[in-house]
Length: 306
Image: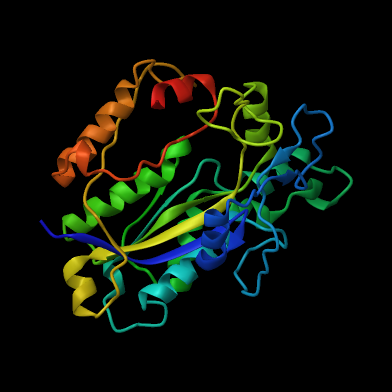
């Protein structure tokens, strides 16, 4: 079986625009939380989130509104990842073997929420055709395919918090099956008022900060941003002289099938998922040096993960 490698990274986060700035913030422990600016939270008990800051947009995309959108975040991260991989301006390869897989929780729900507040005093009730054009989830992959000339298979994963992971798994399978040579893969989200309200009504939002595995935990803090990887077969990367950042050795996918908002109390789904990933990668638990927890800071999730 062909090895699958990563050759490019791109990030837009609440603590940095780009991989370098974001990474420096991560290792310095910078807090990306702020008072919500996207919409009025005066009627809520929680007023903070992790929004993108200082995002400078200097590209032109068709059918884009002036405010920040997932399209812009994902495009920026994709451009950075392609630049690092050496594929940004390299047109000599068969682009029909270049695929895209993006995960998102809510797609472009933020601008679409405007359409729920139509203004009857305006022409067409204030219906914004541009907003309607960017709302369908597949418009995210359409934009990336159009501007980066990727002509292979595309996929949008809408699977809650694991959407990006599912996109990565799909990309891995495409590469292993030799259906593509390269996949631009990752995820992106903004903070729509609908989702903020959803977590707020579940009493799952922390008022100041997220403190997972802490006795004083108060919940999660909703955020926004985008992250993109360039994944490709080892043979293809080696042939074109790419710098290899990491290898993806395996993955696991599962579902508790237990409750709409709570994990199985014994963590059955998570255990199966991790066990399957280790088995695929031919690794043991002793080989693992780092675990990236979901870390929501909620009682059910903290208990299950620990």
